[in-house]
Length: 168
Image (cartoon, rainbow, N blue to C red; front, side, top):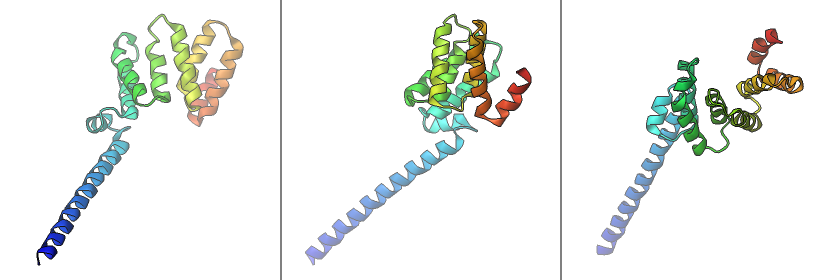
């Protein structure tokens, strides 16, 4: 009788332990899913659940820049968010593009070009990084470079084609 009660007690403990592990993994799965769903549309909610989510940080930085497009002096917060996003995910084209944008008001054009080139190399869908390169290369009258980046920017999406075709 004692052996039966000891075996049943160990079985119950194992069952509770297994249920605890299942509950923990289910909670982690739900948190991860919530972050994945809300990182673009509601980045603040995603950041409240996982504060170091690189996509949510990049989306928040993009929103900061979009809210003050003509005020590069107010983009310091966006630059900090982009750096945090880059630390969380090393190959992050959105963060690199944002760093290129935030160096817009600064005098370091070489850093801006470096970030834009890294964004272009890490993702071929970065039309905004191509536009930055077009702008900088046009300043130096590099017609070949301008046309090359113009061509690559137009190939990224149909939206960029419709926006860039009138300018050509």
